[in-house]
Each structure stands twice: as C-alpha cells, then as structure tokens.
Length: 303
Image 1 (cartoon, rainbow, N blue to C red):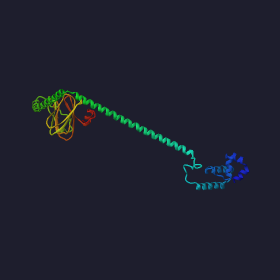
Image 2 (cartoon, rainbow, N blue to C red):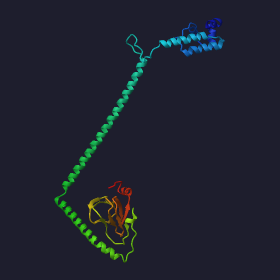
Image 3 (cartoon, rainbow, N blue to C red):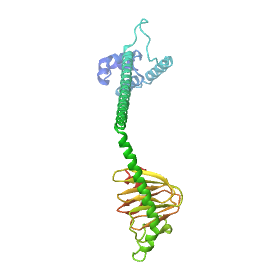
C-alpha cells in the first residue's frame, strides 16, 4: 500500500506532507528497518495512515516481525566491545574507566594523607606531654633536694606540736561538753535543730559556745574535711570523738551515718543509718546538704 501512495502522490509530495524524509520513506518502501527503532518505524506508518487514510497494517506486521526476529538474534549485552583487528579498544568505554580509576586513587591518597597527619599530630601531642611531665618531675626533685635538713626537722617538729595541741583540745572539749551543757540549760533558750532526713533522729540542744565542730562516732568511721578557702583536704578513720576547726568555711563527708555531730551554735544532729552524709560549715553553723550540692561546692568532685 505504501508503494501505491508514493506512486500516486510522488515521493517529494509525500515527504513534504508527512514531514518524513525521502530517505526514510524509501527505506520503509524497501522494508529496510535496520536504521529504525521499532517505535519510530511504527510512528511513521501511523502518520502515513492518518494523512492518506490508507490501511498499512500489512507493513506494520512486517515491521513487528522484523524486530521480533532481531530480538531473538541478540545476545547478552557486552560492556566492552571486541577490539578491532585484535588490538584497539573502544575509547568511549576506556576513557570513563580511566577517569574513575584516577578519581578513586585521588580519594585514597587524600584519605591516607589525612590519616598520616592525624597520626603525626597525636604523636606530637604525646611527645609534648611526655617532655612536660619530665620537666615537672625534674622540678619536683630539684625542690626536694634544695630543702635543708634543718628545715625538714623544723617542719616535722611543727606538725607534731600542732597534732599534740589538737589532741589536748579535743580531750578538754570532750570532758567539758556535758558540764557546759548542763550549766547553760537554765539560762539559754534551746535552738531548733537543722532539718534532717529523719526527724525522729534529730535532737535539740541548748546554745553552747563551742569553738570547734565535734563528731561523736558510734562505731569506727571514715570522715573527710575540705577547706573551701584554700581547697586543702584531709581525711581519717576515727573511732573516738573528733574535732573540726570552725575557723573557715568547710565541706564535711562521712562514710556512714552511725554518729552524732554538733556545730558552734549548739545544734546537735544524730544519725543512725548506713548512708553517707554531706555537710557545709559556714560561720559556725552546720547544714546538711545532698551529694549534688556537695559536688557543686567542691568544684564537681565527690571528694
């Protein structure tokens, strides 16, 4: 039927009316479909049928059969076409492959370089820290060596004298506490005790002008004291009455709660539990606090 359309109207007229090139019309007429895709060839037939109101179903069937046969002949797609004359390779495939390899090598080199830099920085920091520690150790050893024997002996004598004085003061306070409390009960109004976790274990004692904080352990216990002014700390295990100087603001922590303690204004707190207890001492007044507030006042440290 296509032959009759071309013979009747002429190749040039058909091409001008359908906008199909004369070359493509001749290929359709000769049934040479190799340069077309299946949708394109069928599209040309649809245009011809629409413009000339002719039935070209026979030519459509030829196109469909031809492409089906070609599909059966085709095998699995080969990514790399066979080399021409056994030597050349298709450069359209080779060039992208080379670019991918180069880019991958660049990324590898960059990553390796960054890793090396990080390792070198780490080694440098460690070396600096080691040198700094060695210098500090040398300074410490030098300062120890500078101290003369007389100075060391004087420091030891001073420490022993202070300890002896504290022991004497503690014993004196222990002996006089009961007497002082009894004699002051007649003339001094009682002071409310500080709120405790358990009100049943809290007692109210009259005001007694005592210079130091006194701890009365019911059993052997650990106690720690931190001076908030100079940040010095001391700790010990006690089984007898223990005195804490009230000359500055302090933090106090205990290992358990089987003890009683009084401040300089006469408040006496009694405990009977296995828990740790925390206190802040300010202006001679003792206040129990929780571990969170203790750490806050101690610069984030629990001890």
